[in-house]
Image (cartoon, rainbow, N blue to C red):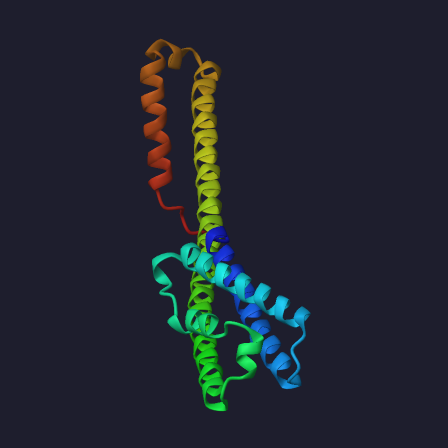
Length: 199
């Protein structure tokens, strides 16, 4: 059994982590060249805007378990434009890169927690399916035993009453109830007697 809500959270978080990696890769690639084109700047602003929206939506979807990491929002707010980032000192860029790594680790820790929940649900589901099948089998067995007992009881009653009608006039003079009681007592007595050992 799968928890659809949990699966959705995991999928959204994985998607966001992939986009967060894409953001970093794009930023590093664009800044490596030194020349920033208008197309790169437009694409950067697009990616940054998408990341900001998705991160906010992620917080709402994941609920109270997920406390937003300020590093993500700080990086997005500090990286105003590629042009501005190109003029950033190496020290400031190193801090942004360090913050990115810390946020990446935190996102993956949270993803690990969600995947652990999924594994627990899967274990419980497998156990309940096994024991559910076991109890279903036990119920079927019990029904079979009850049916067998009822059939045997019915055969016993048919045999008992049938023997009354086949018995001689003496049994019929005693009456049905008396005959049944006497016959049952005789059968019990015979069943209790030990068989004689043959020499």
